[in-house]
Amino acid sequence: MSVRDLIPWGRSPSPSPTPYRKPDHPFLSLHREVNRLFDDVFRGFDMPVGLGAFGGPDTVWPTMEVSETDKDITITAEVPGLDEKDIEVLLDGGVLTLRGEKRSETEDKDRHFTERYYGRFERRVAVGPDVEQDNARASFKNGVLVIRLPKTERAQSKTRRIAINSAH
Image (spheres, rainbow, N blue to C red):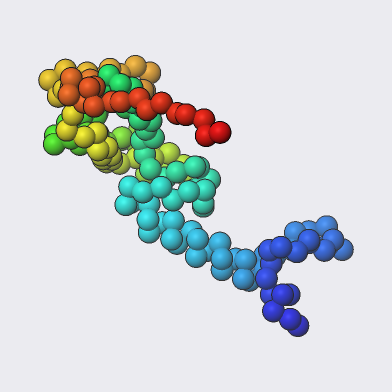
């Protein structure tokens, strides 16, 4: 037996003579289990894990989108199943903080299986010191929180367009 025979990936599977599913190769099972353990460890550190054992693109919740124009910064967060009273939005020292808690509608003894997220959450986004804190606005509709942070005049005047010349 060569080392190449021990590696389950990169080979085409041989057709199985029996109709039942063959058990996983021990190294492939070990590989999957180690990946699951690492995903479980890093789940609580508010960092993306990537496509992994959870099946989704990220394990960070709530998912957010940050966009910026010359005049403002807009942060959109998807928080389905929550009301505006369940979310706290703070802006301090150039950092926007979203925190809250999503509670389960059923007790654990009634639940057989879930892929839904429950519990406390906190996300922080560095927006910089050049936003008008007094004019920040947040709106909430259909599980989507939109926060608009207007930039200060100084920040707007810092933006400078640079012309691109073709190099001939």
